[in-house]
Length: 92
Image 1 (tube, one colour):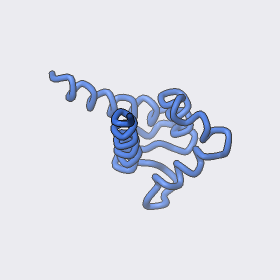
Image 2: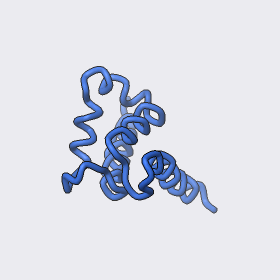
Image 3: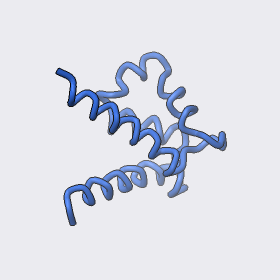
Image 4: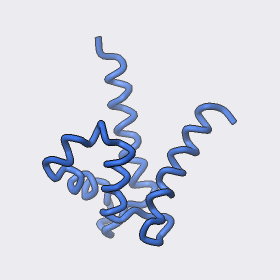
């Protein structure tokens, strides 16, 4: 398996690690999403936790307003974070 394939599988595994906390394998509740963000993206979400930003992140990701974030909605967050990381790497 290539390094990129390993990373992709890792993202799926992280999603599933947190999505099964409340028993549903394919979605994250707000609580599960908070746990994922605070444990897996602690450096990125540190300021957001202080201002209730994690709730705003959840609401922004929940495109269909069903009170859960499915994998496709979660991928929106991953894409945004990848873009920001790419921009940060290229800063002088």
